[in-house]
Length: 164
Image (cartoon, rainbow, N blue to C red; front, side):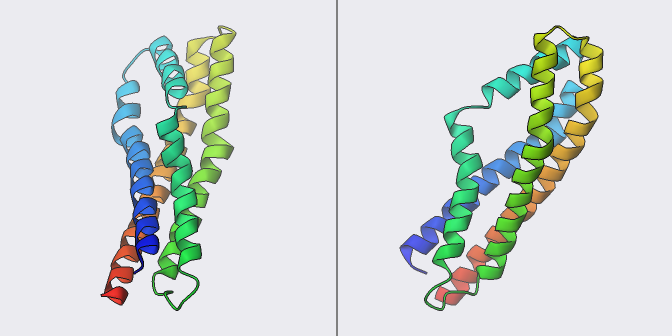
């Protein structure tokens, strides 16, 4: 495995793993913890999290998983190094689905929560509009992202065995 192929595949695996961990952590710790607080605390906390997460580290991992996985696919096309390609393509598809769910469901819900809180809407109504749908689709993201991570891990093993 060339250093560029190996490094790109490793970066794809790391960034995808960090995103899988983030979504999974929300699924099994953050949201269950927030389910135990009152409506105003829930809305305030989710708004704060949604504002805080928009930072360079998040962008690096969120975008890096896509860019590095796509780069790994492209680097494995030429030169007969195609053994990991099915796993790389599966990971790219799965992560693409993560992005689609995020863009179609979770981000619009975050925006609706922020808009409602900004105009001082009833916290109970905001929570009812947000929580169960956001949680359900976040679990979908966590599962898809974890599957993408598994595919990238397998691609690393396949690439290593072919090079080895």
